[in-house]
Structure formats: structure tokens, C-alpha cells
Length: 479
Image (cartoon, rainbow, N blue to C red; front, side, top):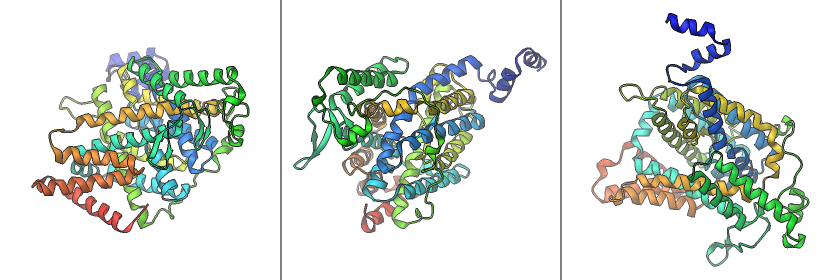
């Protein structure tokens, strides 16, 4: 102990504080390692700053406010995770849940984004209550692994479909519902600038760079595609592009990219239209119970899977194999979901990209604090967010979807009663364009198959209760 005190005396006070607060030596790490790990994780997950506003602005929320909300919400949540739980995990608005918020709750069901934020708040409160009681353990234990894996994969397929629509690769077809677009089309579509071939190129570049473990592969892929689009607008004739009035207001010259500088002092007044605007009272509707349950389920299982995976890679288990600080990290995540609502964010959740920072040595909350501070700096990059064409960023959306789909490899493909409900969940999320419908189909399929094959003893009380709830949903509630 004397030796440690002498070490503190010889170090700058800031380093001594960091050592004591984050227990760096006990976790076999250093300030330099933690900062580099934080930078690594931030670079791998920073795409959310650009992607979340693009998705959620389709709900009627202002793009500028959403960009600032994404940066601020991620910064506060991640710093809280680092300071409170001492875990090397980055948090930000959840992918998939933002699409569910926009296209199902607001789009298909017709609720206002204020009421949709109210459902996010209520699901966050439930998550907090579960995190401070034994309800969390009961929930995690009662839901079969096959359905948990399916939720992640289903959200991935749902996201992939959204990304394909955003890029213009998939378009509506009166005969087949959907079909592939003209890949030579360059113009302004339903969701913004469309260039199917460039959107597909963005996905391919990101996938290749990520596979080769190129640092910042996602951002490089987005930047490269943006640069190609920018060059095309200079080289190709103006009449090559289908530019509508909406496109002109987006980017006067081309409908793809406009250059007005990369940095600007943020105008926080842009937050005012969405700050503290959740309609919690309006969210108290029977018809919205499945929505609240969906936000809760996807959030809690995604969070648990991410945190356990990060803990394993970071070797955060004690000598008995118990994960150190898991309870605190779950509480930090659940509280962040509630805090994010204040800024107009969908559920803020832990990101699996945190494993990137762990892989280069991140072991403590100092990694998370570094990530959070970098997200805070992100507010100065609003001009860059405006400049990036949607199809370049949507390539990342398709890539993330593919990563999430990989969870299906954990299924027992020899047991029909396990993989059929999982596949049903995954497929129905995309085909009905509703995450909640997919979850409902999965639970009903699971229960019926288990009972029909004589395995009713494998159906937990929780699954029975949720199956009954989802049956009632289809009988009396309709999106």
C-alpha cells in the first residue's frame, strides 16, 4: 500500500485520480491504453451520429435537432456508464429501435413522434425497475435462447430492408410488392438522394474494410462513397441526375452533396423542438402495450447480450466466473434509455462495437469516458452530417444488418421447435415491416410447436403469459 501511495505522489494529480477512480492497475491497463481504446470504439460506432438522424427525420423530427440529440445523448449515457459502472462500453441510440420508432410506431400505426417518445420513456422506466429487482433475471431466464437470438437477427433483417429502401436498391412494385430498382438511377427519392449502385458500393466497401480490420472501416467506406458521388456531380452532365425541387432544397447543385465546410459552432436552439417533448400521458394506451413491450424486449436482450460479450472479451469475470459489475452496467444502460428520451432519442443502448476498443486493451470506464467526450465533440460536425448523401451512410445500415443476422448461427438447427419460431420471428419482422409483429409471431409459434410436439414442459410461465398477450394483440389490436 505504501508503494502505491508513493506512486500517486510522483504522478500528476489527474493521473492519480484516474488510477483511483477507474482502478487501472487492478485491471492491468494504463491511461494511454484506455484512451486509445476509447478512440477505437468511437471510430467504429460514430456512424450512428449520421445514420440515426437520417432514419428518425422520417418521423417528422428535425434533422439538425436529431443530430445534436444523438451526440449529446450518446455522450451523457457513455460517460455515465464509465463513471458509474466502470465498464469500457459505448452507448448510443439503438439501431433497429430507431427504425421501429419511425416506420412502425409513427409511420404504420400513425402515432405522433411525441407519443412514440412516450412509449420509449415508459419502456425505459420498466427496464430500470427490472434492473434494480429480480425481474431482470426472471425475464432473461424465462425467454428461450432461440427467441432471444431471433430478436437480434430479426431487427437486423428489418434494418437491412430499411437500408435497401433508403438507398433505392429496393422499390415498390404493384405486382410483386417489391423489386430491384434501376441501378443506373441517380436522383431524389422517397427518403432522400438515391443512387442504388453507390449505396451498394458503400456496403461492399465497408464490409471488405471491416473484414480486413481496417481502422475506421465504416467511416472510410462512407467517405469514399461520398467522394465518388461528389466527383460524379462534377464530371457528369447536370441532366444526368433526376433533381426535384425537394432535392434542390437539400443540395442546390446536385441533390447529392453540398460543401459548406465540415465544422460549425452548434446552435443548441435546434434541440428546442424535440427537447422534453415526450408525450408520456398519451402513451398510456392499451393499443401501445405491444409497442412498449417491444422496445423493452429488444433493448433488454440486446443489452444483456452485448454486455456479456464485452465482459468475456475484456476478462471482467472474477475467479469464480462471475461477471464483475454486470448489475451496475445494466442499471447504467437502463437509466440511459430514460435520459435519452429527454433529448428526443429512441432507447439508448450498449453497442457491440465496444468490443473493438476492448480488443486493443480497453478494460475500464476510462475507455467509455473517452468515447463519451468524443461524441460530445461530434456536435461541431453538423455541416458534415448535412453533406453526407443518404445512400453512402445507408451502406453502413445494410452492413450492420448483416452483422446482426449472424446471431442465427447460435440456433439449434436440429430441433424444429427451436429454429422454426426463430425463423418465423426473423422473417415476419421484415415481411410485415414490424418488429412487434415479428416478436408476436415468434412467441405464438414457439408455444404452439412445443405443446404440439409434447414438449410443453419447456414453455416457461413467462412465455405462456406473453403468448396470451400477443394472441390478444392480434385479436383486438391492429397496427
